[in-house]
Image 1: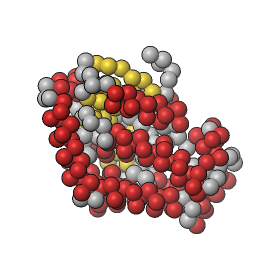
Image 2: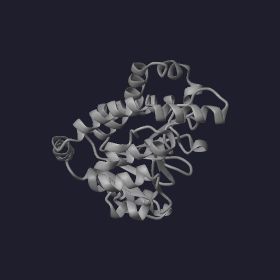
Image 3: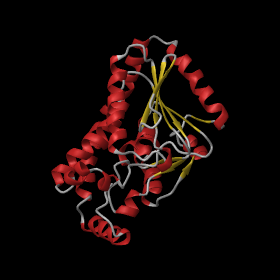
Length: 269
């Protein structure tokens, strides 16, 4: 295992643990991390021995969102966002598809949430099957008020906590603490840092005791229920709305202000 890689993978019995590994930036997601994550999910699909996937983050946080400096560091990204269609293709491939593939895995998914669980990190929390959090976990996203962009996190988060709570959190840039997240159904349990991995491993053993096909079919039925209620349709519409919002007058003005303040190259979400 390369401890400096942006993503770490380890097998613990029937569970595959996948770790975001950019702790110095609170595991902000860059291109290398997301491409590695997509590859890791494909390997899960190919391995019948993996019964549960646990997603966690090294360091102080689960994930603080997408790395806004990536547009400076990654030339292909910078070129992609020069056009509307280029940005849409890039964000579909790296921002949307990995979350959808995580949601659609045939095995149960568990998130260990601690520290910052923001923006793109919130997307993974919102679509996980089970979420276990430490008391220091905070959930939210500053994108709508700070960047003037129709936040990509809207559908999954609103589906998990309800429309009114999502509006309050996302429009007003509020942070939801772990206990509140448990009360509204975003988090399954809140546990002390020295207890949470042991609890997750106990949950893994319980899940692994159920026949794999039974869990797969149960998960498929529950996902079908969500999709028939409109989840996929809303998510598809929202991505178009999100893409358009990058090019509204307000979003472009906010981007120009950030560029002037930072006196650097273009920034992006």
